Image (cartoon, rainbow, N blue to C red):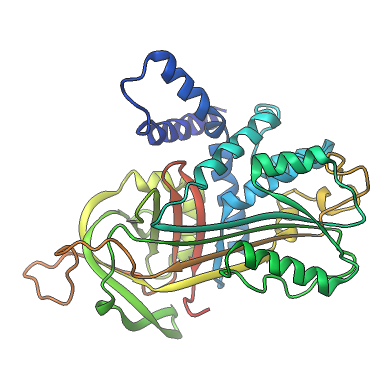
Length: 411
């Protein structure tokens, strides 16, 4: 119990410090109290969000030790929280406990308030970041939905409930794919390959991100270089290289180097390079110690950084993964979605697609980028030319927007 309390308070303090920079120091005490109350819903759900992120990643990593893994935990959590608005009894309990919440400690209402606040934070767009999300429920046209539920998910979660003719599976597939392509302005196409006529409800969540680095990589220094997938496999990848100051942590007890590569705005990509042969040890350490433990060790340091220029994309039906995490009833005939409709209904598919483009684009700082020169005392290097992890963090909320393992950048 003491460990849980310490964890919760440390997360709350971290988030409070992040949000605190947005508060005006000249506000009166009652105004500070108002601001504090406004952010409390997010502070309550922050530890559970991180717990869910690591648990889901760990489960996928154990099942796919040699494959790339890429997902957006906060997007999945928000989608499931939305679904729980219409879930009742054991179905609702399984969803919220599967997301890491102790439902005897935090009320459903506070959980939903927290996600509503979180979505507002993440939907703050700017010219330096292209963030496109699509959240929708596609429901069989023969199943009438409660008007209140449809209004609630649209208002609080930016979700749409869309009537679909699943008896015509080809038409339903095309409807869903066209909807996503239109909503993402062509960034995500052909999401689904097929649907069967037994489908009644599809929970859909997609997220696309392309950002501008705080400091650009010079395209002239991008070279095709070796990436060591394993002892016997080498592939050629375009490697971006830049010399500059980054926050860096060397963690010998966990066998890794951690580098914070910031985007313009409120997002950072935390790159984690395990020592050779230590990837799975680092994965285990990450779940046990959490990312904050390593970021606290970071110090500004001038290094030569090399990372692959990659586009990462994955599409998963999360049904099996979520069932293994205890979220079972919602996918079975035991589902109680009586807050959505008076008819019998269960989730047929829970589709999650995440896409990330990582290139050289960034703020140009004359004289800040310097490679290819011979220095008397060259700075240390961090070359991500073997399997590595990266975690994209929203600094406004400290949420894990993306978490990934890159085993082979070519796949």
